[in-house]
Image (cartoon, rainbow, N blue to C red; front, side, top):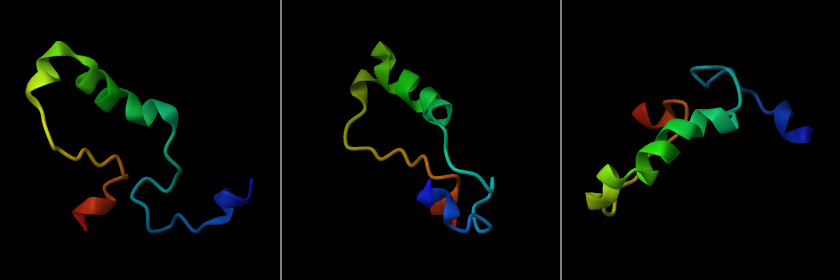
Length: 51
């Protein structure tokens, strides 16, 4: 797979995201309690948006 050739040394976890990394936010958004949320962005980016 060619995309794995990218340099991940700058990523905090030094790996590509896996489907299970997105599971927690998917469950959160699927719950009835999240029905009041509107117009929010939930970055799932290995902490890259913090820098």
